[in-house]
Image (cartoon, rainbow, N blue to C red; front, side, top):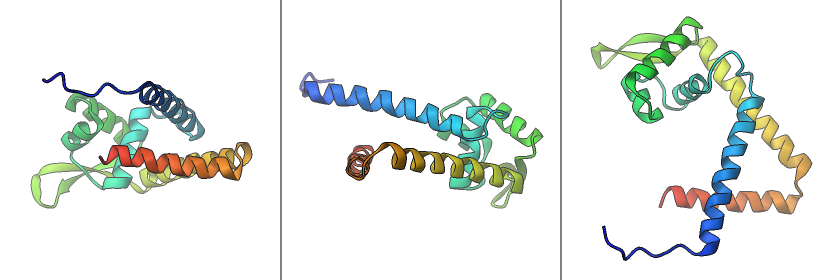
Length: 149
């Protein structure tokens, strides 16, 4: 590794800290808005992933969620017991099983997403000026650019 790395400016370091702290706090606050008292945050995340990406193998879910296969198997088993997911044969490889949302799981994930969206939109409307909301929109575009750089 070379020592040619450019040292970040004081403002870059401050911005990085502020973004990390605020995004973490916002995620925790938004999570509490949904009716997730009866399921864990990991389970909520799996439901959201299945809505977004469709059915997936447990190993795939583990990889994208950044957890061990055994941990994901336990998460999926709990969701299965709650009737929120089901295991189906993979149409391209009958030896594999895919985890898919049940109707109840889809309704739960969509309801949680809607509740979070409504809370955030209402909070932005009530607590921010139009100019501040436009600043948030511009800042999100900048952060999105960092993600895809």
